[in-house]
Image (cartoon, rainbow, N blue to C red; front, top):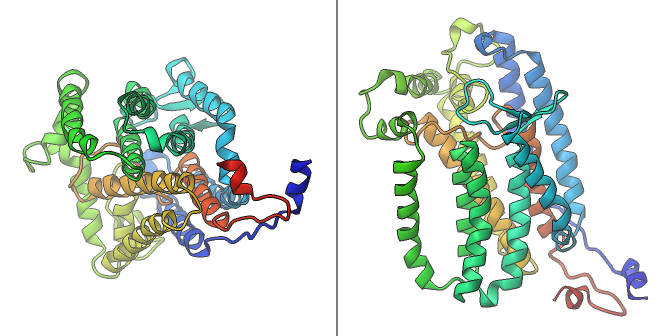
Amino acid sequence: MKSAFKKLSVNKHSIDAGLIFAVTILAAISTLLIYSISESGISDIEGVGASYWRTQLFSMIAGIGVATLISLIDYRKLVKLWFVFVPVALVLVALTFTSLGYQRAGADDKAWLNLGFIQFQPSEILKLAFILTFSYHLSRDEEDMNKPLHMLLLAIHGLLPIGIVGLQGDYGTAIVFGAIFAFMICSAKISWKYVVAAPIAVGAAVAGMWFFALDSFHKKRITILFHPGSDADIEYQQDLGLAALKSGGVFGKGVLRSASDYIYVPEIHNDFIFAYAGQVFGYVGSIGILVVLAYICLKIFADSRVTRDRLGRFICMGAFGLMLSHCIMNIGMVLKAAPVIGVPLPFMSAGGTAMISMYAVIGLVLSTYSHRAVNYNVFYDEDEEWN
């Protein structure tokens, strides 16, 4: 009887137009840049043809649809389907350790899945699953989270995806998962004792990775940041990236110039697309892109403060951690302030999986925003059912 009356409830649906507009502006700019790369021939050595910008355009359109669809679904109902999407995400990631696993050209990790008709990165799906499940876990356990056993279970929940992608060799994505976990758990009622202990635990984990997991090549990528100019081979890509970024001057060279007018950088369509944006749009355009990225991050954080409940807050903070960590690490790579670690720039780097998954994350934020108003019913209050 109660379920029948649900249809009578009033859903005051609204959408965060500013957020969806900002991400779509970046996606459109990305499509234009990749089109310019393919048409100018600057990246012929990597085979960046027309299929890349077409994939980017299709992914942008599909992403808008995905984000809109997710925004229409009440996030409180969505998290309760964890038993559906978690097994799917884990199975897809597990398949990368089989013969279906694929190591993309130029990458250090075997983190892609090749199904013949499509190639994609399952860890992008795992990010969504983790944000939803960890938000649900925190929302149900926040009052008891500082008890040792409860904190241990939360830590295991957070370390599981980090360990899985770490085994793939995808250390960049592992750091992203760590950032998501940190922002989400720090937005809960965590005791200061755990906050103080966290740097010690992180330091021990980093030391363990340094001595037992990273090979010499990965270590050199890190140490070179403190000794610039000491290894031309390791610094080659970042030096080209910096030179490309600077070559655009104040207002840039414009799009669709000949290949000789641009500086070629390996992965210029993907991890180093910000360097190409610098060539095309110059200093002014680069700053404009950074402003839009900053707006997206800050808007997600602001939306976390107006959600109707703690579940919505945790979802937004997970999305904030994801976006912020991607931006910092990717821009840091181009500016030679962070090691080359293969983390794409949100809504800018080429890749259909990354584009659609980022839109899906935005969809989760939009869902918390659009469902922030209480749905009233003559017979009952939906909030009572949730609590």
